[in-house]
Image (cartoon, rainbow over all chains, first blue to last red):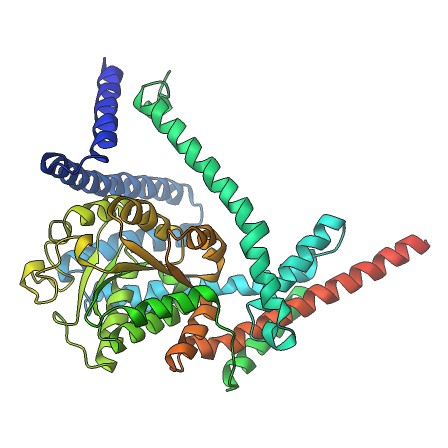
Length: 206
Length: 270
């Protein structure tokens, strides 16, 4: 019975949201706005599920003595940040934002910047012209790299032009094919969910 | 002491290349790409006082690349006297966007509430984008600083997308796609972007089809834009380091292949 109720709710909301897309009637607009507000509220509750999951996993592993220091730092972050937000708020010039700007942002930027070093090392060790396909990949990557630097246009006007051609034809045609495939797949899956054919989202037995 | 392995030398080499390039001041002349030119032309040709949404849809990790893009766009928009409404659809972009707008607005003597407004963060980006299409004041009843949306001189008359010229989504991921799919397709909002270099090919089909009007791509795009607005910013400063590191990587690829060919030849002789 519980599964049937969930399927009926899914069907009604699926059909309503589909139909209201094509309507500019004030009632339809109001329904749309109300549903969108509920959507945001429901999303906020999903965060609670995520936080509880992370905390439970880390507490269990601390109990077993796995990477205790790192897990304590994780839990401290999860507890301290909301505490700072609750006491002083989340606007600019609050302790919460100080932590974000001076701890989180530099750490994230540092980790992301390390990618440059890994790319350099991986290029040296792995980018080999082992076959015809690998050679095409290597030449294409080299031209794109050159075109994104200031040197590309200085060496030859043809380098940025060829890079643009690669982006506009081979790369874009592949991207378009993927995008159209994703679009058609999304429509099919949505219809299957709305009509109750696809039920894996309900969890448990089929 | 353990001996340094080849990869450590590669890391050290890159560190030296980037450090030296950052210290040098070499004027660069870059060829402007058509997408960057189109964004510049769009902002240039918009009537003065047009209202634009600027959405900071990025995380803190991409700040070194995102900041020059955002600064270049904000500088041009404020210089042209456009009115800006900032927001963030990823939590991490919230304070970054606010600080950037505050800093660039101060450079051009713009006033909060009259020339720009910052709405802050709204969770669940798809719902937020669709909701703003129906009503911005309902989606953001108060701005980032806590003032009621309808109390600010700039935003009081801005009810929905129908009242703005377009949105510029500054992103390091696929969030601009949602602006295109939900705000562009449904509410006919003009979508423009400032995206990281890694995301350029993702948005190429949208630019080509006209669903995305124009975009600035990566540090190179930011540097091209700075050239157009005649400002020396982070894009042009970082471009030399990026170019040097690209050439360094190309040399490493070449060296790696020479070693590989020599090994193959030796193996063939045996």
